[in-house]
Length: 200
Figure 1 (cartoon, rainbow, N blue to C red):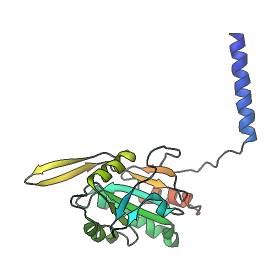
Figure 2 (figure 1 turned 90 degrees about the vertical axis):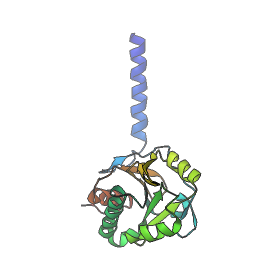
Figure 3 (figure 1 turned 135 degrees about the vertical axis):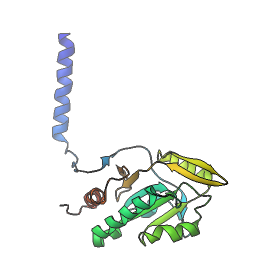
Figure 4 (figure 1 turned 180 degrees about the horizontal axis):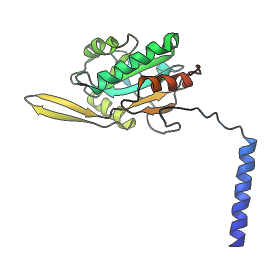
């Protein structure tokens, strides 16, 4: 027992020495949920509302905001996109360093033409992304996003889906998760941190 304690003490001492010799990573005071180091949501292969193939690498050197939804959504989706439009306004010229991506979970109705009319209406830089049903399902799974078609009868339906937002830093690393209703001020604060901008 005494030997085990002595071994544990030696291990702790070594760890402390190693930590002392290595520079500690800068700790950022995020308002949103910090998911730095998460292994999911690494990339996607979809097309944008102009018909161009897109992947996460296309937006390197920008902070990327990814939200899953659909254009017929009655509340969550327009609220989130509207909130991001407020954030872009708050960022001013630095908004050019941010790319907002709206990934549809309803590719049957959300064609590129529909997305092109809907998404940039919130902000001209916002991009809508779509693909085949299989590609959308794979992307949603990769991002741990749930969605389900809820039939209402007579061919009408809604889409239940995860209502959170993922944020990547300019190096392409997933960093933050924002729950629905996180607030424009919190989103703006954390994006400024990722972009090395002054915060209040």
